[in-house]
Amino acid sequence: MIEMIAAKPQYTGRCMLCKEVISKAQMTRHLKKCVEMSTQDAGQVMKLFHLVIEDRYLPMYWLHIEIPGAMTLRHLDSFLREIWLECCGHLSCFTIDGERYAVSPDDDPWSGLREKSMQPKIYSVLAPGTKFDHEYDYGSTTDLKLRVAGVRECAVKKSEIKLLARNEPPIWKCSECGKPATWTKAFGWGDEGTYCDDCAEDEDEECLLPVVNSPRMGVCGYVG
Image 1 (cartoon, rainbow, N blue to C red):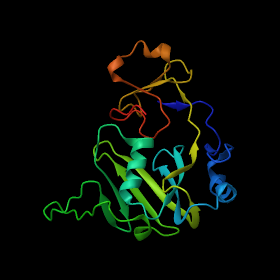
Image 2: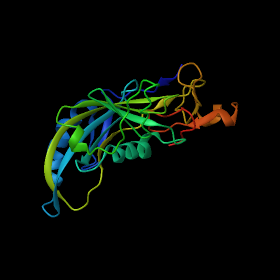
Image 3: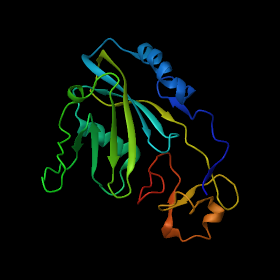
Image 4: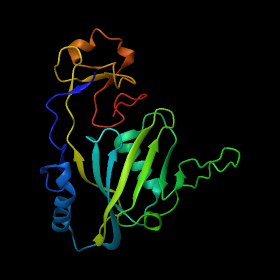
């Protein structure tokens, strides 16, 4: 079985504004103060949404981001793909208040799905406290939970998604010798295991994927 080496209590992460390492449980409170201190007066006033994102089954992987409300769900989907998910151009969707917003909507009555596009703007579908989901790859799905931790109005110079905080990379144990792992078998969550560089030499190179800081690690062709 895959094991972690000295699992960090409460899953620590790094604030991208002040570079301080803080526990997952304390990060939202920390960012409220840190964001205010880093706010600039110049620029266009925008409504900014603070989102907390984590993997549904691997809570050691988490992000805090801030996204302008005038951006669309497609912008958010693209960001998640770039930082955590993209491997082979799989389909994806958000589920918000029972509605599905898909990158390639299926509105076929015979399939039973009534999906919408990802064109809605963030401010039109999200509000403070909203909890919603994101799925990437309907075959080997990476399932994310998202929550709106807050909304503020602020003058910003550039309309962009800003990474506020990210989990520190988990340290996985080599299933053969116990050293820190650098490789995992493709689709290897569970019994297949992870390997250090030395132990990986005994494995089929084509079946190995690198250990990376993403819940997509070891799945499909994801390499970070």
